[in-house]
Length: 52
Image 1 (tube, rainbow, N blue to C red):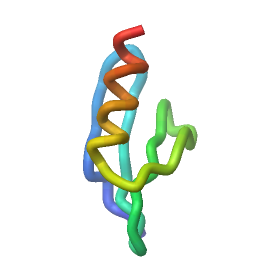
Image 2 (image 1 turned 135 degrees about the vertical axis):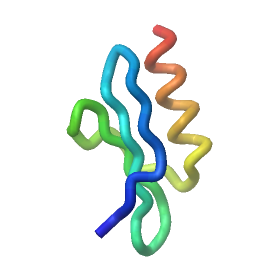
Image 3 (image 1 turned 30 degrees about the vertical axis):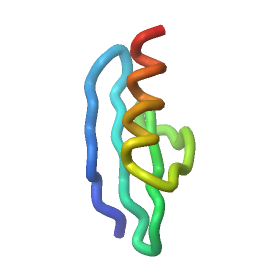
């Protein structure tokens, strides 16, 4: 089971989970959005979406 490593509440409810074998998965309002190779890229994506 993957662990939530980052959560953000803004216009949307975001969370990022770390995959067991590497990588990160981003969810918005409990729906899959994207895969990322690192957590910083996922955080940047959230910031961009929230600033629009």
